Image (tube, rainbow, N blue to C red):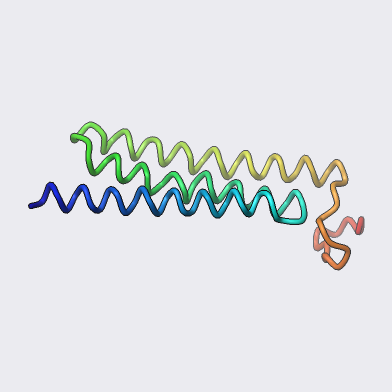
Length: 111
């Protein structure tokens, strides 16, 4: 009985992860500027992969719990840092924010 419940929970989590990543792909295609596309990509990397890793940990043996925690921690750290660095590099290069009515609150007064 518990085995079937674990399988159904894993299938549900995998489906949720795939739906989140699919929505993020559409967000990356349809968002107006680099910054909003970067936001969609970073959310897909974390919120889409997290349920899939939890599903794998549910179906695996006890060794997978430790691996899943390490993978989630690594993805959390790398996606936030890489998104920040890419956004900062784009801002320093003068990349526009997508629309003309965007307010720049950085104090640099570019837009």
